[in-house]
Amino acid sequence: MPVDTALGEYLRARRALVRPEDVGVVVTGVRRTPGLRREEVATLAGISADYYLRLEQGRDRNPSTQVLDALARVLRLDASAVDYLHGLAAGAPSRPRPTRDAVPTGTAQLLAALDLPAFVESRRFDVLAANPLATALSPSIVAGANRLRSVLLDPAERALLPDWEWAVGGMIASFRTSVGPARPDPGTARLIDELSAGSEVFRAHWSRHDVQPLEGGGFTMEHPVVGRLDLRREKLGVGGTDGQVLVIYHSDPGTRTAERLALLGSLAVRDQMPAALKSSPST
Image (cartoon, rainbow, N blue to C red; front, side, top):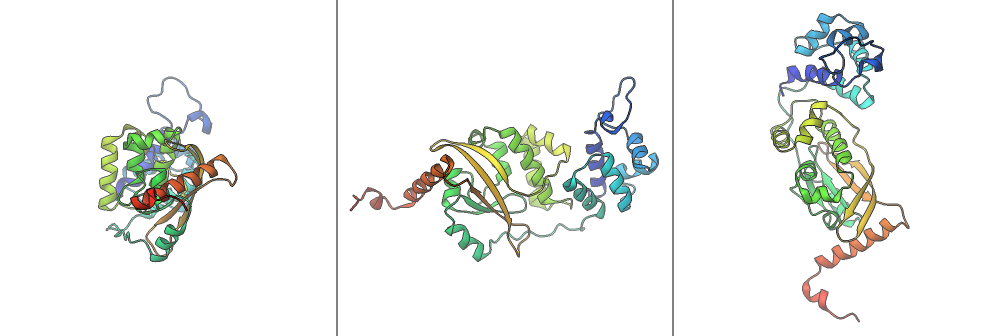
């Protein structure tokens, strides 16, 4: 996506999602435009219609903070979306910054020591490293895979998530936050093109330009071996890296999910044992 149209595309996408009645606009007759018209946004934001048109067309890319905040109010943006809007207006470097995917040694050691499912992902949700329990939770959580690609395109991954549609929407919004408003690097651009071509769901959500904070939350998984797991997800930034995140799945102590995670952990350990040890009689 060219840098000079990014702000305009975002404004068009977001005004299409605002219902006129939610901002006090009286609707009369048949409206062909979904959401708000340009003139309505301009009037509500206190700017001229011509100036707003220039913003959407990319002919003016330096709106003031006051204008951006007024537009954010009209478009009913939350805090994360406001930050994203300001980032778009601030522009982007002429060259995408290079990504460095080496996981720091200390983080890799912590990952191996954790007795909970955990992995490290990059800014574009590539899995850079994963411990055995994470892979036991989902075979697609393995170094070299991409979490967004797996959740969208792998039927086996989809079967694990009973709330798949809800999970996908949040994941795509978090992905947009993670890669940021700058021009995407070649790898990210290829991923976006691939998912746009292969997933109607991705195209629909991506066109909305939703953003969501990179934070933890709860979700449910239906595991084929141990059954239902009600999990929490924590996302911890890895210092000294270009946006790497340590993702840890856990549950409340003493719950059925905790018991099932422990069982899954024992099975994962057994699967890593040499065959001779697996068959050895206990003493």
